[in-house]
Image 1 (tube, rainbow, N blue to C red):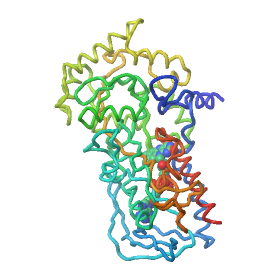
Image 2: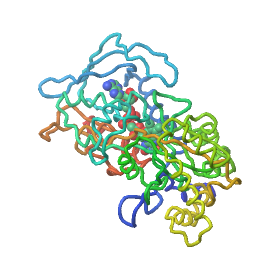
Image 3: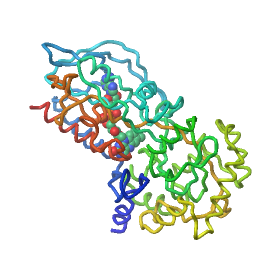
Image 4: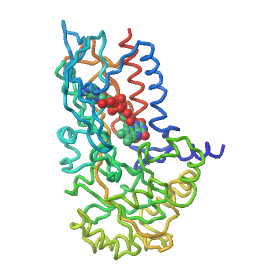
Length: 440
Ligand SMILES: Cc1cc2nc3c(=O)[nH]c(=O)nc-3n(C[C@H](O)[C@H](O)[C@H](O)COP(=O)(O)OP(=O)(O)OC[C@H]3O[C@@H](n4cnc5c(N)ncnc54)[C@H](O)[C@@H]3O)c2cc1C
């Protein structure tokens, strides 16, 4: 019961949203995180697929890359493409794309469920929305390299209309995975609200761009700074309580459905194992016992040369001074105090307010943050049954689309500011819609 209550109370943990009572953001805790994480969701589907394969009603063709949809009499009647060479590459390396043959499949209905575009940075940059300024020259990949948007061109060549390509969700709290699963693999920190957030030159981000408030708003602001990265300045105590990491590997307690580990890692003192691994091995982490040593190491770090170190020092000292000021006008500190009044946040998301220079909360920590590609909200235009539409708005016979490939079936279910944790539901739902329509 206690665990359920805690889970309910912390359901809004990923992102709060900023600004006023109206407008983007969460005014109530919202749904999130699955017991078993990604693998827990995939397993029942995989088991059903394997059973169907055993029964001879499903054929799975791994290492088959579609390069063309086959059209006959104005309808899509299948797909053709390359059979790729077997590949046993190590973690963190793109598997071989060498073609060793070709294939063609004929079908009464073809559903494109090829995911988004985040693994293809050139495509991301070319679709980058004007309102977000110039695209970053450097990004990390929050998705595997096979999420490369290749089926968009293939589907467009078959007459499908692509819409809302500039709607994408990228995170600004990306860190380089010290143990990457795919090339340029970045992990998103889902931060609690206490770290001091500075741009690449050392200026504090404007209110209300606090950690864990408004990712897209922060991305928009950072693109005006002329630099791709930013910094958290924080303390060990804050990292221990407030740094959650996105991804199944980073959450072994939830992925392994291990209640003991969950209680130990989330409620006990000390960082979780994966967070400790980043403190020890992460290329973006600087850990020092005092302010001057931290500043020195930040300046030496890749990208640290453009920091105005006097400004960084001033920001940290001014922020720390406000800790003793009950009359504070520092909006972030006011927000910390308010969040500590909410049980869920107090329990697992917000450290007791303290000075970043407090030796009892230390050592001090700086984290260099990168832009991390993740979600595509545009793609193949469909109707609500997942049927692909052509440039004239008419249904293309035989062609369907679902999941991120279609922005969840026609432009997004949860809206442009769809937050972390709101994608899988739409992917599954649009898949069911398309599947049912295709079976008719
Ligand atoms: C680390 C991480 C954490 C996430 N966390 C959450 C979360 O907490 N909550 C949430 O709701 N969402 C989360 N998401 C997002 C969610 O996982 C995705 O939105 C969802 O999995 C997309 O599903 P999809 O089936 O549309 O595409 P994908 O799962 O990307 O599958 C697309 C498939 O198509 C194949 N493909 C692509 N092109 C071709 C081609 N030309 N020929 C043949 N095959 C092709 C790919 O190889 C791939 O197997 C997360 C994503 C990541 C990467």
